[in-house]
Amino acid sequence: MSLRELKVCLLGDTGVGKSSIVWRFVEDNFDPNINPTIGASFMSKTVQYQNELHKFLIWDTAGQERFRALAPMYYRGSAAAIIVYDITKEDSFQTLKNWVKELRQHGPPNIVVAIAGNKCDLSDAREVLEKDAKDYADSIHAIFVETSAKNAININEVFIQISQRIPVLDAEGSSVRGFKLRRQPAESTRERSCC
Amino acid sequence: MPVELAGARPRSFVILPQAFRGRFRKVRGVLNVLATPERRILRQIIELAQDKGSYFGCLVQDYVSFVQENKNCQSSSQDLLKTLRQFMTQMKAYLIQSSEINPPIESYIPEDQIDAVLEKAMHKCVLKPLYGSVQSALHEFQVASGSLEKLQENLALAKTKKPRELGANAARPPDSHAIHRIRRKLTAMCRMYSPERKIVVLLKVCKLIYSIMQDHTVRLFGADDFLPMLTYVLVQCDMPQLDTEIMYMMELIDPPQLTRRSAYGAMSLIKNFQEEQAALVLSSTTRDTLHQWHQRRTMLKDLPSVDDFQNFLRVALRTPDSGCTAKTLQVRPYATTEEVCRLCALKFHVSDPENYGLFLFTDDSSQQLTADTHPQWIKAELHSRPNPPSFHFVYRRTQT
Image 1: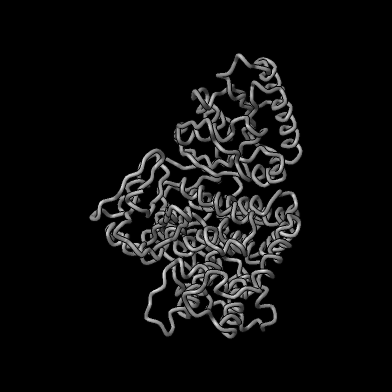
Image 2: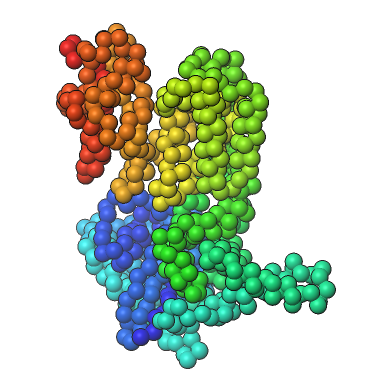
């Protein structure tokens, strides 16, 4: 089975639950008192998708304004971006739209965009209608799911859908060989590096 | 990987005649094969970091220019250093998980050494190019907060005092020649970008001071004799920049590296700065940092915290007339309460030790420890509980 590395970055307003989504996905855990991310955090998880192994290399960026300028570093080389908003905060949905614009302008041309409306367990305090968000996602051809990192709802689905949308490899594609110890010249490392 | 390295830095060969180049390449190739796996990995990571065509290189380069351009967007020295620390930690995780280093690092070096090598590589790739801007940003913060001015005042005041007045009355202080030597070492330390190398210098300075104290005397000095002397020496050196230096070391040293013996010793020493008079040569922000730092470090359960430092025990003396004074005593893990009591009597100058005992105070209770118990074991047991209670060892009269 071939192993493929997929770089994914999370973007979105501060406090919407980006790190919690990653934690739920990677560690299947939830911490209500998680600290705000500084800069960006890295985590990875390998899952099987059809006859491939997909190794998600995840950059979880900080939502705080002071780290805003760091985000391009991480999305530039990404195969997919998960933009997260909080369904109980209208503002965070507006921020999401700005992220989409920025990705369209400065992101990689074929980046897969997924929109995650997090905290769907708090539907009593909902400010963003599911239909509105879904319509918006459709209009930009993005994946859309409402998630709850707290109750483990739809977290894996986001990543499964990303796997589905990633273009299949051609013969010369960027698959990472499974056999680790084999040497290879540096040139091929460079080619492969940006997904 | 000789092939890769030969062409990696062609600039260095520009002035050489064409004929020599091939030979040099061969020599380099041979040297490279001879290099230790650690050096090879280091070199490989550093070259990757310089290659903007790689994802890793792109991140490193972008980050370095981001910090250089935006150093003022951070609100404090700590924020700046924490962001740096976080970046290095996450990049190490990335290097281990991704396949950018190929063959993978674990095929070169044993797993328990990987982190130390990666840490070193990050220092070279990130801290080295940024050192100048980070230093100047830290200095600006120090000026802007007014702490530099305050420190200079404190230092000027302390400089007029004799060693005895700073509490360093037990041993002979270093002479001006030795102070000069120490100052030179510390100045060299300020130019180093690696927090670990800085710590090594700090430890060497401490060792030097200690050996001067120990000269011409048979008495063994403990932590409570040493720290005031360190204060005296630092005052004489008159280097207010040590404040930011300490912060740099504390914030950038990687937690796993703390378990290494040298860092461990230095950190317990730095921690003591705050508790003893050396505090006067550090600004209050640094002292707050020390406090937070200590809390952060103790939150990481699997790491030994400085308080667990096995050979030290902090004991408070309580007397009816003078309230509380505390001393950090050197207490071996196997020392009994009886031995600790004897040491306390000596250190606190108690003339009637038969009327004193060692007590353990926890949140809501206190109890006298019997002569055959081991205070360090008790401390270790308390620390290992899931929610360690706050506790103090108190040396006081058995009947009040």
